[in-house]
Length: 83
Image (tube, rainbow, N blue to C red; front, side, top):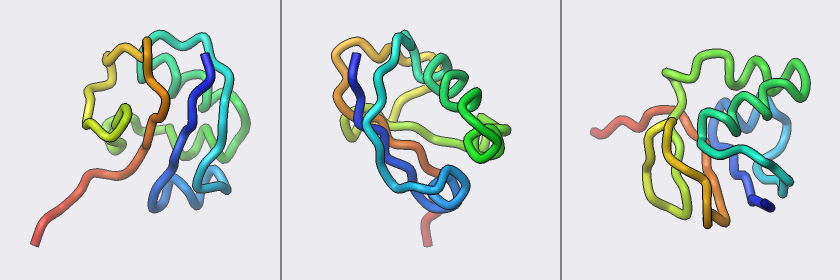
């Protein structure tokens, strides 16, 4: 499947782009993270602590085991804080 991936904050800095289109066979967010982390050192660093990352599928926050079937966009970002 083809996904638009968006990166925010320090994830964007580590992977070197704010968005990209990827072809993937990943079934879940966790599978996608594993695929991305295997790309190169920057991606590996960005995804080295999955507990420090939040994900959204088509603008809805999801857990790491969320299925990607039917998704068009995935966004990765650090935890949000309020104030």
